[in-house]
Image 1 (cartoon, one colour):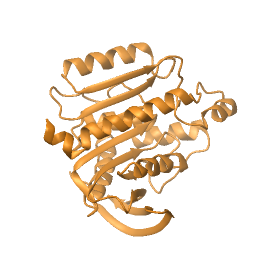
Image 2 (image 1 turned 135 degrees about the vertical axis):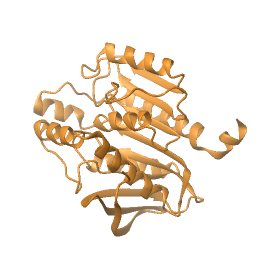
Image 3 (image 1 turned 30 degrees about the vertical axis):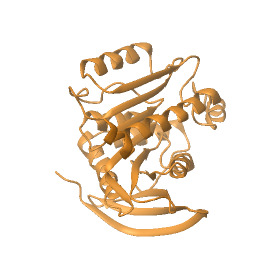
Image 4 (image 1 turned 120 degrees about the vertical axis):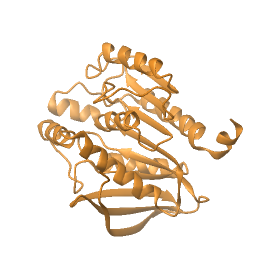
Length: 266
């Protein structure tokens, strides 16, 4: 069943010269979701599009900042809402409940993701044939699941996200290129999961990149991780070196997979 998508409102405001953001409220099967589009209005259109999936905390300032960072690189970046009405959590118990509820029905979770992807692809400023998705923590697991589920994407990247399949593993000869940036010391992604992911990618003959950052813990890209770890006793830590390196590698990855000149050279 295809998701019922209805665009409700569109609000635009300038952030800096060339860079604009648009908050979009839309409906999927009668429920309201809040997305956040960022792009450089001075960049030559149509732009490649990138969905950005939030951490288990929900659609907060962090995921919007990542969308703006992608916009500065020349992408139309859409920070999506997997929980509904843009809600966010302030406590790990609440975040865990939100995340669990959002994935209780994988078909419904896929509808929410695909609705946001369709909204991005339909934008006149976006090239719907050049689409990617990236995600952080919870969002990384969602992005990987959508690659496994056959979403219409050219590339997917996960930052400190779960690597275990939520349903079927990646099918053989999947056209989606996959990049994973993982903390080697992350107890939430044990070594056995990393090994199983490598085997899954090899069995599928997948175009993939796996980078394990020695000593990096969960949420290594988020500067607020240390504060959150201290407040709630969680195994999190910001790692500036891993954050910078993974972001640089993401730029190379997206350029290789989404730039038209690279496609024509193959």
